[in-house]
Image 1: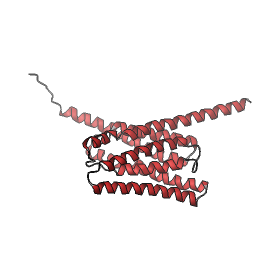
Image 2 (image 1 turned 60 degrees about the vertical axis):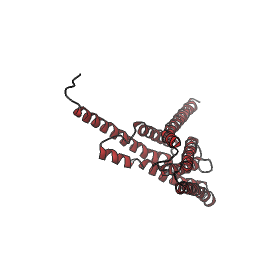
Image 3 (image 1 turned 135 degrees about the horizontal axis):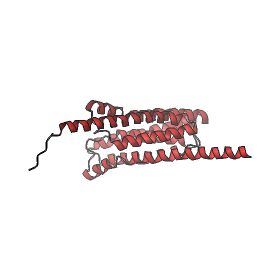
Image 4 (image 1 turned 30 degrees about the horizontal axis):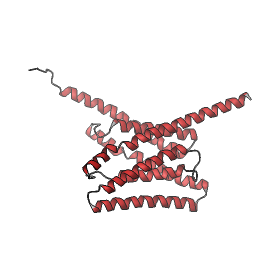
Length: 242
């Protein structure tokens, strides 16, 4: 009986840690989802999409839909916190894309974004159809899991261009700290969630995301310090007051 009690306590502690990691990942992901709001307030205020691109939001929409599909009971079980975060994420990306369509500067641009949105939804529909019609449960989970891994790795790799820009310019102007920190914490949280669930399709891409996030934070700390040193060097040695 004592052994059973210890096992039960251990299982309860494991579930607590697992759920805690998943909830933390949802919170940090929500910060990322709302981060473009200032951009969209500007678009609505000016009545124009200006030079902004809808592509990152369309790609994020497809990524969220694929990961959401992976987390649903028809494909996987016990990963409900992956389903919640990606459902919320898909809703945000769809809303952002709708704003692009509503405030597009030209009919051609509006048509292009609309067709791309239809393409994303058709691609997701095809993934759902193929995975349901041609695969049993286990192979279906593997297929959708590998698709979600590929999609997440591409998403996490997208900041590489920003990292390259930071190194070239020796400035962190284009790499906001709160975004890099939120992405890092989200990746670490879902990495832990995947490890605790022993789910390869969750911990592998988020482990890569955590490493890339750590690189961004290290670069931020280094070039922020370098920028401060340059500012100190350019200050006058004597300041006279009138």
